[in-house]
Length: 344
Ligand SMILES: O=C(O)CCC(=O)C(=O)O
Image (cartoon, rainbow, N blue to C red; front, side):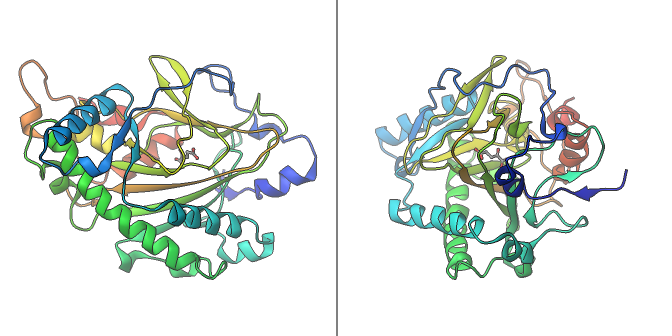
């Protein structure tokens, strides 16, 4: 089947019609339920991650155990003000509130994943996600396709630029802290990330869904990044993480950033850090808006488990490879977990 694009979910949601069958999730990984137990996602004070004090050492220990336990943490004291984070959320909300025709100026095409749109339809049997997205490459800056960057609201581009510039610094700080938490040289992960790693931003709109019991906002997946920064909706929960075969809800911590390990950091850490499987459930009454920013190592640099993390007791678990993102998409589209393709 030739790839095609589906209509905005936002339009389907207001039509009042029953959602088409192709949105009904048929996976076998458990019921869709928004009332699972809450995961105790550790809070990490990011201002302490650069400190050489006893409190800094303590925070590094917490970071290591959070990333080994559930692969994520709620980052607080990250240096972004609450009013600025509200502004980031506001520009996303204003963009999705534009009339469909105005958003479609930025529509993605079948050849490009960037722009406004949603799932590519690659097969008749594919289950579609109940979400509309705006997907943009933000860095390296010379890779930006500004034709997809909204000009409405007027401050959209400026706010996204400022937000991701700050996240880029946070990504560096975090990759160094992750290495230090494992007692290895602090540039071990950063070296593999490269100086021209990619940062992509995905704005997600989950319109209210008439059948939250049958339909997912996003199917289960782990991220192909090294690290992902998620700005959750301020009021509406939806994200769930799998741990030990069980789904857990991820709570909203106002103005925290939910930060998770992606497959590439799991590989570089030789499995010390876990890239969590996650999914998004929908809400019957309320829309939900989130912004995920993926930090992806430079595709031409080989990534692989850091030597010091390989030993007789802990053999090398993953192969070295370049351009993991390509491997990621090939496997994801076939419904396979991409990191399995990297296992030895
Ligand atoms: O919207 C969310 O809570 C998570 C989004 C997500 O998993 C993704 O964009 O890959």
